[in-house]
Image (cartoon, rainbow, N blue to C red; front, side):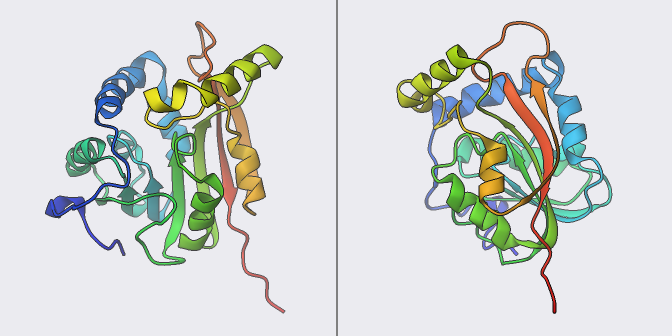
Length: 229
């Protein structure tokens, strides 16, 4: 169970503090639901989930409305205070129980093997230590538990990958809440010991200009089941 709830209002320290970016993200993410088709992506990301779910980096809670009724509980981790407050408001409108709590991906405030599924939605781009965060995902998942992920990252030809790496080394992370555009979520999950399932490339937006943030991947992975004998 989570150690503390954002609903109590008793939060003394935030692992992440990007108030200007948080306001910007809250605005553009809502616009992207219809304009970029993100609502449909969220439906595909969460379809078929059941049991207890941990969502890491819940942002302003836009996933909450898309969880199926087979989910018994969502524990949503969000380190940024403004986004967490918006997520709490979204949780109150959700049809499934959602508890929003502070915490960082690299040190999740929940028990080991406590969840049937973990959701990673546009979060691996901004965590400080991807291997450590994915190690935490493995810790909190039950053996055989599922990871659903939708992440943007490395893609395109030589010119685009050069541009992405240049942005990551210079202006992009400080201007965008620690976000990186050249990370490879699929490779990171594989390196962390997850079994990769179906995954496919998604361009965002599907039509229009190709941006350094356009190369996304939507898919499924599993924590390997314990072997006996």
